[in-house]
Length: 194
Image (cartoon, rainbow, N blue to C red; front, side, top):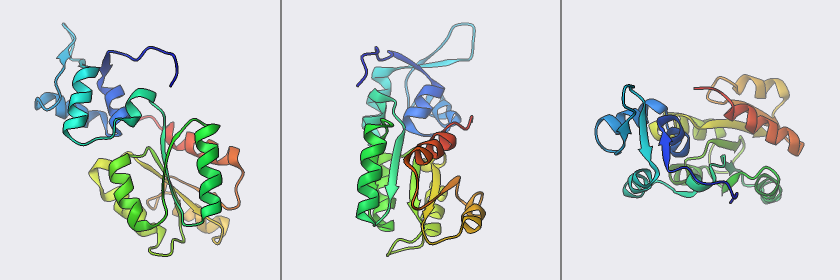
């Protein structure tokens, strides 16, 4: 963890990034009293004390791992061990992302639910399910509405992969890929302003 001081009070936008939800969802939690905080006098801006956010996240079974680092959470869904090992090591060590791995479409659903990734790197050719189905489940889950899904394939042609963008996918990577390109694709997907 970096030596920078953790903030004691957060904006709704910061809470939204930590919890990987839309800022309006945080406002709704605040307005219904589910998440305790206060309004800045003379303005409509909401502020949430860190202690209240931690209490809220624990009460709702949300992972606290994104809280202290603020790191981008990346989930790799691939059943090729060699690809997974290399990607996981590089994304953690070089890019400083928090990484979780799911080796099947079934595990992807369970892991995404708990980990609430910012980005999912999804292999299109899993043994148990088509990657498009996994993407559909992710996009259909209100808890994961801001999660970006990036298709990965070594079997599909470039033009086939391009067609996936917009159809449930936010980007694509053609295997074998260059690590810098993987990091750039993740950064591009997460830099979208909401």
